Length: 201
Image (cartoon, rainbow, N blue to C red; front, side):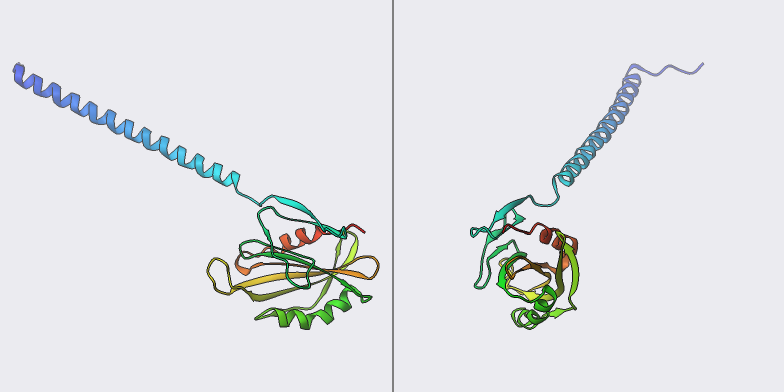
């Protein structure tokens, strides 16, 4: 028969077993805590993703009552000479100029190309095309240029833009331009903004 352990040896074994159990329990608690923290982080990331998205827009109505359009809520007004309105974000902009002309959108756009190139450093543009906006034949040209300086970095910003020539009544034409940095440029977004333009009279 094997000898029973002495009282001291028995206590030593008991403490060792308890320590092992404690370590296992502690390990399980740590793993559970890690799992909980991981779930919390994932949930936070999911919430952040859900909260992201396009910026809300607000309706702008021309003080003269000629037209309206939608623009991002946070953009400021920075209208320049020759424009009816300009709204600017970080490096993006929407501008509208109303011109009096009997020319068709396509003909006016072709004549405007030289002025556009002169006003846009590093201009590279394609040919004009016709698209339908609010049931009207609208001429449009896509181009790239160097905007700037950036209010954030102070450097020129490689940018892309779409310009739309939207016909109205009484020999009026709206020259609608949307521009943003090329890195994040969204042509579909340019079209969406152009579609918000409405002649009011």
